[in-house]
Amino acid sequence: MNKLKEIKAEILSNPEVIEIMENKSVKDIATLHFGLGMYIRNRYLWGNAETIQILKEYYKVESVDDISWEIIKDLYKELKK
Image (tube, rainbow, N blue to C red; front, top):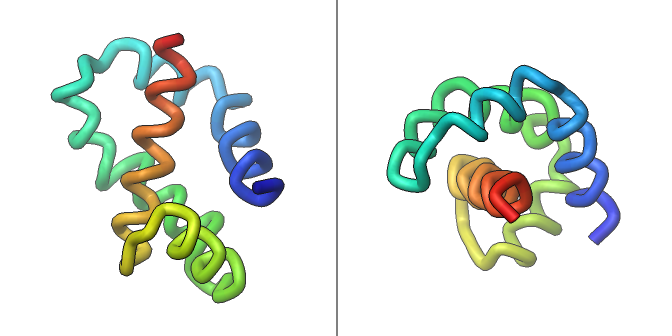
């Protein structure tokens, strides 16, 4: 999924995001919903119906909030490898 790879790569190119996520435990990543999650929704999802539809199908979710949450979980997993 090229669009998702682009989104993740751009987010992970930000050292502040990496620092914030690396300092979170898995049970604390939900606190990123209003900060990083809002950034993902505003920057990559809202106003981009095609991307929303593709990611809804990919993640098997129904809302933009759920998409941003799935992306945050993916990013966290990538950083903790």
